[in-house]
Amino acid sequence: MKPLIISLGNRYRCDDGVGPYTLDLLQLVLGESSDFIENVGDTSTLLDIWQHRDKVVLIDACYADDTTDTTDSSKIQPGQIFRLDGLNESLPADNPVSSNHAISIANAIELGKLLHQLPQSLTIYSISGNNFSQGEAISPPLLIAAQQLVSLISVELNTGNKACTSTP
Image (cartoon, rainbow, N blue to C red):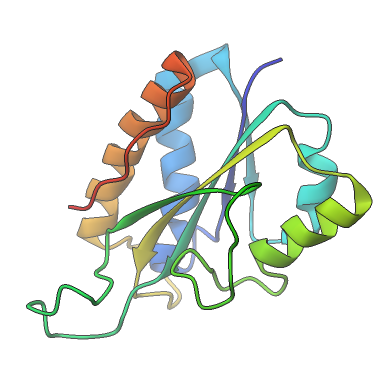
């Protein structure tokens, strides 16, 4: 069975569009070797989408710290990439991978566990952003991160090895 790659996000909310943008790039690179679904952020539909799947990769945007102090390395900066094993690592609400959807990804996973509607493997990639206003302009650090994420996911899917996350 082909891997399924799902993007979450709204193309018309600036940095929130990095998921669909990355999905577009992955479709060009991976072609028919994977299945692709763009989800505008309705995480409640994930249960039906990913059940009975062997491998699912979920791509989403998360909030970066709203700061101008770039010397503080503990702050999450726009364009940072986070990777999480969605089935074996917990995803608390204050985790940087948390997004802005009505039902959090963490809640969708917990509901999937209760209903036995999870894929065999679920990898979550999140790119931090800070402009979620209306518009189509994705911040430059996120565009760079999307390109890096395409490489990471391509390697992971082609080799079966976990890709290392990186930051711009």
